[in-house]
Image 1: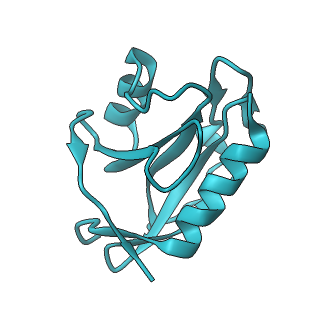
Image 2: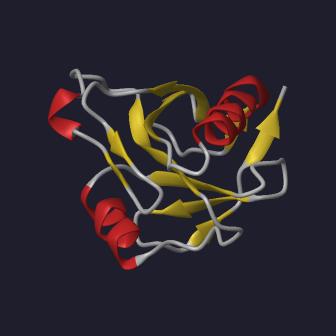
Amino acid sequence: MSRIFGVEREALEFMLGVSRSSHPNEFAGVLRAERGLIREVLVLPGTFSSDRSAVLRLHMLPIDRSACGTVHSHPSPNPSPSPEDLSLFAKFGRVHLIIAFPYDGRSWRAYDHRGAEMALRVVG
């Protein structure tokens, strides 16, 4: 799979909207990309969420070469990854988005599998 360089605006708007509607609980999903652009979010069956965490049931993920990482929300204004987030990042995927309250175009960050912040362009 190619390097991830961006996120499609429509996909980002979906993630922001779901994060807002899930508040104060966290939202979590799996990112899908084509040709280096994040285009979709898979919501896995059995995903558990509360106001403190979200647990993805990765065993429910279909075999999908376009799966490239995860997205989840933080009900606080802090988009920094927790130790639990960093553990997930290291085990699955190459890019991870955290969308923090108030879930707008400025409250999200992207991280690589090591937890280092990375820049993604919004496309479209």
